[in-house]
Length: 361
Image (cartoon, rainbow, N blue to C red):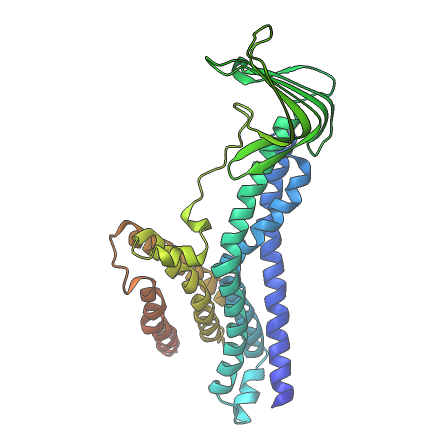
């Protein structure tokens, strides 16, 4: 029995990894093409493409892990049924509960992976993507600066000058003239400086410099020295996209559970993990084929079931967000309905096939 467990488990794990790898390459391939297009058009720095692609993996795992589990189970047991190995095992006294335990073991591992990505990793990846996009905007501002040349600030709010400007925002011999509306000019000079992102704003940090406040030729001219000064340049602020509720961490969603939108996404994150176990069971039920019969038709049936199941789940989540469907039972409906109705369908379908064959004889 132990040898048989290792044999079936290895087949399922290999099929699972192969299916997951192929599906991941397909999804990331389209994302890479989109990001490279933006990089070629100058809207995105080329060195950020790899980071953004990697951050898409946790989000993609929410969709791919249930599907990979379903197809891996169907591939493994479909081959066992097709090669009549299941008949030999059944004749040896090995019942369905034994195979179900193996399927649930793989499903539990995949469910834990899906739970990690859905509950923790996906929201973190979305937040990191937002920060990286802000960093790309800051680099765009930096690229507009040319060392040794005076650069007018937007809206005629002053002039910026730096002797040297590095790619990462390090500045040498900085001079800034700020012209606030209805206020005296301010002159800033420092031997070095650099840019930083603080929240949703870009700030220029000057070190060991001087501040001259007041118009030249005026008796009220204030000169101050500073060791460290943060300057907020007008119209150079990073514009971060609004943090969507999907990017909020699970703890924040729980704190906002009185809101239907937050509760819908909170239920969705745990629903993803539970759906993996459901897909494993459905894969085992749908993989049964007769000897010398095509098993890939069942694969199409399983894929169709997954697509229908996912679309209904997404529609149900939208209904919960808008308040059209009650928060309780909420997404639990999607876990019980397939077990109550879809599992008997396979038995009814087999009975109809037997009756049809008998009618043709």
